[in-house]
Image 1: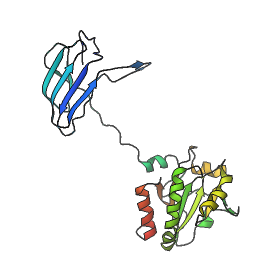
Image 2 (image 1 turned 180 degrees about the vertical axis):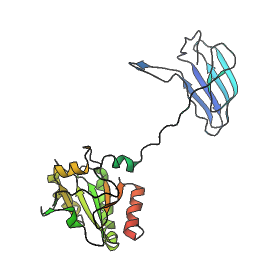
Image 3 (image 1 turned 90 degrees about the horizontal axis):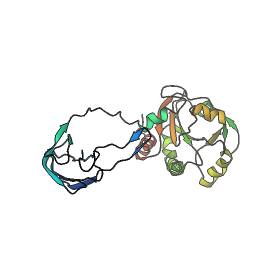
Image 4 (image 1 turned 120 degrees about the vertical axis):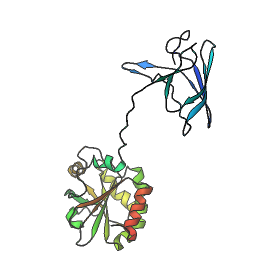
Length: 257
């Protein structure tokens, strides 16, 4: 919008656009700050429509203008007091694809698919016995390492479902172990495990081991890592959602590769 009596920026102008979905209304407003300013355009989404059926502009001074059948996917300039509109050619560009959950997780991990899982200093959460990752791996079997924490709310939802899948995983040649990333709250792990009667082994780590898993310093849980019988990373499963649940069920039901 380009105002005359309303001022160059045409603040306060009301624009209504008619489409197959009904009438859309927006008011031209603006704001600015240090090195920033609002987009001066009014943007209307027309869906699959090839054109706006009509556009009505109500300027602050009371004057009204109406346009008919304005083509979609176009930028136009409407000037107060001048009939019609002019097309504005604007450069276009493609936005980058959003980062997937798995890629976001991989960027924070100290290992990758195809590489070896880090050797960590571990302790059994119940007995306090020292353990190593290689001690958990048995010949001819895979190991599913579930990363979790006592402060993680999604983990509290995931753990009972993993307990239900535990027998199926075992029958399908996959051993399940929980690996807590608690550091300052590590003392809470034994009571947490006991209260939930977790049916699979649960281990804790020292701070150096957590740093080996998450060298960026940001622990992302829940997540699971599937290892082969040589300790190599076969797959990384980020988060707990419908897609992750389906993959876990596949691993537990014999459908996983």
